Every structure is written in structure tokens, then in C-alpha cells.
Length: 389
Image (tube, rainbow, N blue to C red; front, side, top):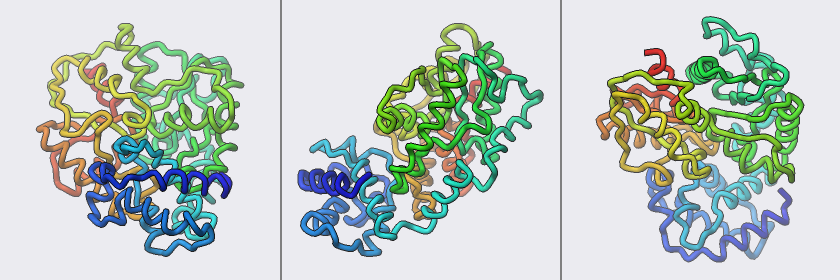
């Protein structure tokens, strides 16, 4: 993003803020911190004062910290009466931090690592399929099978973090049971690039987008499926804009595909006598509009008692794990997750299901910290339990 587009966005958007305060009511950061400077309208006011008249003004360390104290959940954008695209504004502000050398050290380290390893972990990208060792038998078609109809984009969190690795293990077993002709990109799968957007490095996502899209096209796949909410959002909303072209193949989230397989009778859940609630990932529900498929999967399982949380769907409260907040303020991220897991506990459910590996990691950690008897899992894990039951 150029400096010119930054200031145009910043000035145009900040000047139309009516200071109604709607954004404060839904902001998970403001709810935790309580200071006006942490609220979306407070950040807009500060931005207006700092930059609207003088584009050379230096951002203070205190304001720089406020810019990074955001999960990019999109609740403020949804609540804004003036329809300001606040998520774009926050990305612009983070780009300004990068340009001024004021980005958190964790951001810089992460970007350097992404450029070097093409993933968010400290592991070489050739180890992306190590999670498959958890399978009883590794499918021959798992790694870049030519002419497979479906490519499963696993995502960095599921590929490299032990707890999240159970998600692709479950997903692959379900695809196998349903007779889906699938494969993965293996070591040719690069990070989707979302961490770059959230760190103010929007310009650098183009290389990752070009590589990932071209790889899928070369494999001849008709469909790409991913179980990561942020990966899905980037593939569906960012890649076409960055590349200036359509993907050329169908894109679905894992919950959409699994719901279709159940409807077609290719996956038949057996009875599970459990009370379950569902946490909507921000990038899947509010920001991408995929709300019903996860619920269709859960309610298709005989014996399940499904209960909604106080906030759900587009109004769902964030888990605290988005927007690179863990790198900027891990304590704040954990506090937000703590509130969400308590909301889940209030439903009386024994299982909290989500469809985002980052959400699941945050909520599981919060459940342990709050000593709550809640089991946290992915929709694919719950469905596999039912199919195998």
C-alpha cells in the first residue's frame, strides 16, 4: 500500500466519524481496557489529530501501542453507523507504523520468518505434512497428487502446532471416508499471508498469493478447501483483489464441504449424547458470512443438544487470537479469550466447537486457565467422533 493511499484512506474515513460510540459496545479490546483511547472511535480521533493536517507527524509510543491492540475482528466495522471500513483503516495505521520503524519487534521477527520459511513457525516448510504421522496410515495421494479434484489447504497453524494438528488428521480421515479425490500442496503450500496484512505489510502478500494460486492451477484441481477461517477469508476476499483476477477454481471452507458430504449421504454421523455450543470465528462468520454450515454439521449428529452462546453469528464475541494481538499484547489476548470461554461455560455445554484452529487454541488455553470442565475441538473433530462412534 502506498503512502498516498494510506493518507487518502485515513483522512477520508476519519473525518466522517460521527462519534456515536456504537463501535465501543462491540470492541473486545475496549471492553477489556476501558479507556477511550482503546476504543475504535478514540483511535479515529487520535488519527485525525495526528495526521489529517500534518502527514509527517510522528506517532507516539502510547498511540502506537493502541494501534496494535486490536484483534481485527471486524465488530467495529459491522457496528459503525457511518459504514466506515475500520478494518482497512487499522491496516493503514499499521502500515504507517512499519513505515516509521515503530512496529512491534514481534511483527518484524514474524515477517522476516515468513519471507525466509514461507510459514509462521520456526520449522522448515518441507515439514508441512509432519502432522500426517498421527494417521494410522498415510494416504498415497496426500502429497501433491496430480489431477486430484480437491486440494486441501491445511494452513500454518494446523501444519506446525501440535494441538491444531488434530484438525487436518480429522479432516483427512473424513475426506477418505467420503471417497473424495483430494490431495494437499505439501511443501508447496505457503502461508496464506494474513499475518502480513495484520502486521502492516500488505504489499508483500502478492508474492504469496501468486505462488499459492498458481500452484493450485498447475495441479489441475477444481476445488480448494481450507479449514482455517483466516486462510479462507484471505483466499476469498484478498487474493482476487491483489492479483486482479478470479481464482479459476471453486473455494470452500471445510465446514461447507463437510455439510455437503453429510447432505449427500457420504458421511453418516452416529449418535453422540453431548451438549455442544459453537464459537463463530470472526473471519469465517462476521467477515465471510459462513454461519450456517457449521451448525448444520453439529445438528446433523443424532443425540446432540446444541445451545447457542449469548453472542453468536455476526455478533459473536472474538476469541482474542486475531490481528497478531498475541505478538503485541499476549496478556490482553488471553483476557479476551477468558471472557469468551466463560460465555461458553454459561451455556451448560460440555463441548465448545469452532472452525478456526487459532480460536480453538485460544479457547482451550482459556478453559485451562479458568479451570472450566470444557472440551474444545474443531467441527471436523466432532464429526469424526460421530462418524466413528
